[in-house]
Amino acid sequence: MNERAVLRVKGRVLVGPDDVRDELWVVDGRVSYDRPAAARDVRTVEGWVLPGLVDAHCHVGLGAHGPVDAGTAEKQALADRDAGTLLIRDAGSPSDTRWVDDRDDLPKIIRAGRHIARTRRYLRGYAHEIEPDDLVAYVGREARRGDGWVKLVGDWIDREAGDLAACWPRGAVEAAIAEAHRLGARVTAHCFAESSLRDLVEAGIDCVEHATGLTEDLIPLFASRGVAIVPTLVNIATFPKLAESGEARFPVWSAHMRDLYDRRYDTVRDAYDAGIPVYVGTDAGGSLPHGLVADEVAELVKAGIPPLRALAATTWDARAWLGRPGLDEGAPADLVVYAEDPRADVRALAAPLRVVLNGTITA
Image 1 (cartoon, rainbow, N blue to C red):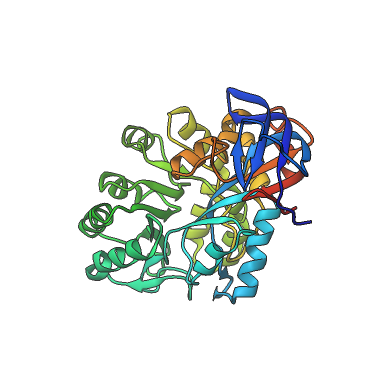
Image 2: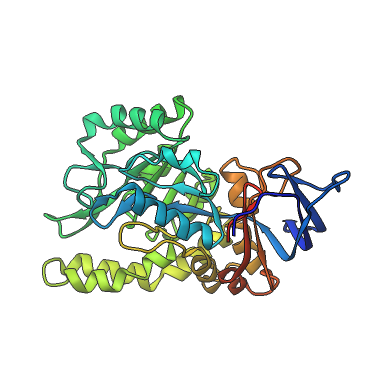
């Protein structure tokens, strides 16, 4: 059902973790906490209300073999929307998805441009594959094309070594990150292993995706620099299958992937306990389906993050980190309504009663 009218949203409106209100109004697609004068044709929606959820690592327009057509990308975005994800940080896509910005019924996307990888050191069809001498130029290009983010591939399997290895020399990442910051963009990087992390963080990176290689000696460095992580635990769940598929050819890599998987929850909990910002991301696209945000929040709780902080990692804190409003006065009315209190049990996120995007009930 698609409607755009005055909405009264009542029940428990979770404006922030400590700011709970009885109702809000949606007028001309925007949030208001003042009852509109002479409101007509008011529709009332009741329940527990959160700002639209955030998936901070998602890939709209990306399939298993690279870019997908617009129809497939639309289905991906709709799957996210219907799961309550109304803001996406697209952490690398080879497809041009700017057309989504013209659709009021699709989630808002913050783009990181296309992945930048070392030659033959990433999944075929996904990334610009270049050598270190070209890194600064390509980072500048993607910084101008994106929405304030650039995505590097920080490590990948080195077939000669038979294990994960850093993709870029220290000097190249220092120059590339400096260029992105000069252009007003933040930088994030795909990193599974331990070996690439220190150079990237000391070079000034803003975020690390997956971060399974975080170790006891690296965690204080991340915390002191304020470098965020997006663990994508629903993606890390695929590591045992990946390890099995590559064991005959790359036994060292396979054992490494299993070890990273086995300590995944400890890694995330230790990072959180040290004060490292942790945000929700699913890594949907490629091999994973869209619409997994509730599963990822549940995984963070399983790792030991308190439920309220896991909720914040996909709502209030995530929106602030990405520079987008929540349920603020005058903000676009992007919200999700639930039958149960998601603070009591984050599994409530898997069953939204209503999804309201730009003031319209879409699901």
